[in-house]
Image (cartoon, rainbow, N blue to C red):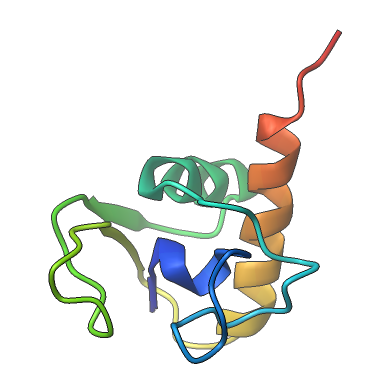
Length: 92
């Protein structure tokens, strides 16, 4: 399974690659944030490929996270987006 930042980016349309609802998505997620969120969630072995291109945007090198998991991509993306939002929230 592969997750690109575009898959959970609230600033993009579904046609541009967003895979979850805008409300659940995150503005301008970074591949490092996604990787960290996957690790925190304990979703198995993950590999960060920082220079990979999203197929719908071959000129942008946004990177991707590759997981050894076969099912539940939509639910995982929602969990990852929620975790990225939580990580961005300042704690006081």
